[in-house]
Image (cartoon, rainbow, N blue to C red; front, side, top):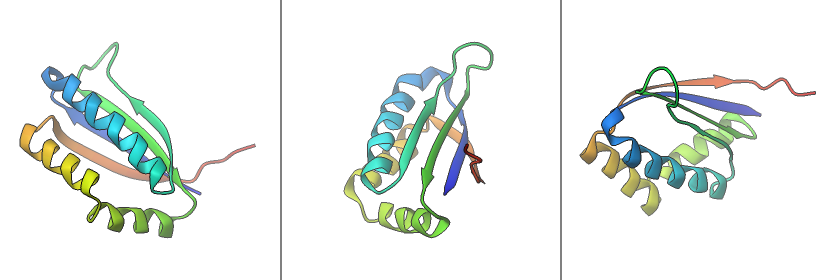
Length: 101
C-alpha cells in the first residue's frame, strides 16, 4: 500500500471553494480504486494550510489513477475550477508507506 500525503497552501478567503473541491476529490479517489482518508482543513493556527491523505494498493495503481484523472470529466472540471479560481496557491506531494498493526 502507498499513501499520498498532500500539503496545500490555500487562499484562506476561498475556504468554501477549497472545501467543495476537496469533497469532490474524496468521492473520485474512492471511485477510482483508492481509499481517501479525508482532507484536514484549517481550524486553529495557520489559516492557509490544509492536508489530504489517500491510499492506493500500490504505486502502480496510483499512477493508473493519475493517468485516468487526465481523461475523467469530473477531474478535468475540478482541475479547471482550481486553476480559474486560484484557491490553491501551492501544494507538496509526498508518498508514505503505512505501518499497520
